[in-house]
Image (cartoon, rainbow, N blue to C red; front, side):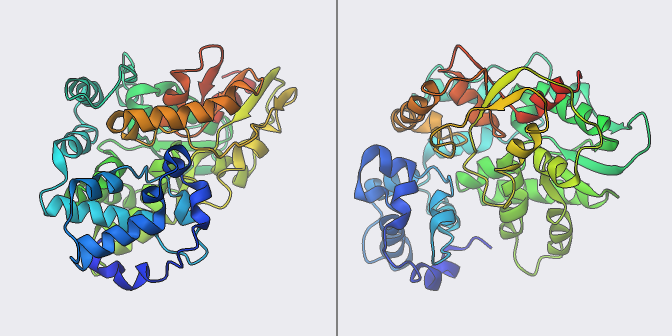
Length: 398
């Protein structure tokens, strides 16, 4: 469970090598030693753990400035789960009453999946609080869950049966992604079950230190998906996948009776292009004259193959050509609600990312993260930014 005191010995494994700083978006942007993971861990240890130093507003700012991109965790040779420790620190900050109104607002509003206008209300309120730009994503005229629910069976023989976890980004902003997921899976002989009652995966709440909110959502989703007789559970969002695969179990005590179901559900979790590439396409895609570039989401570490799956999958489309970015894994600065809460830093991180984007000539930019999709898309006017599954759907003529 994400209790800060449980990480005391683990923190000591940090060798202070600073190797991770070369992958930290906030450090690369600010060039500040306080942004390096080793120093964030030191602040946590000396203020929230040992209480040798007071927990000041500056200490809170340093911990809040972390994007939770997980790049440092993926880089760490000592396997220190730095992002988990920072989340645990934010939970502790909330318990101490120092999380702040901004964290409360963004954590609560963006996780109310059942409230149709939650994202729009969060954006409006964020603007009034002065913590967001006008770059708030527009809600779709009709959410995905209002158009798709239940079981979708392929026309021919059923090869596999999957459940589809629909993230909030797809549900409220990009239902076109969800539609493509269903159609492509069906086209490949895969039955798709979209259960009613699924809620936000919980990662926005967890990132804001709202453990209670995250736990509630994990419990709801796990109980729902554990009852389904399926071969796999797919999602189109890498952050949702990470939440299920790596964070869900940590939201509950180790001896919680639900842990067995969490293990069963998370063992079946796949990002949809990763799943299709692993299973192999049943239907050969037709030719599609398109050049595409691939922005790899930061939340990719939970699967060893998720970052290469779109490349391998779309390579099977005749006439489609990949134009690689110089640095396809560079963070865009969106990071969930980060771009609203830390506007100035996020925009600098994005500006750096856009140098690579603008220097790479392609027709379309692809990514499996809805936040990356709209945050890059706000500044890229000459190209479409979308999910890889959409290109495969077009190659199928769907």
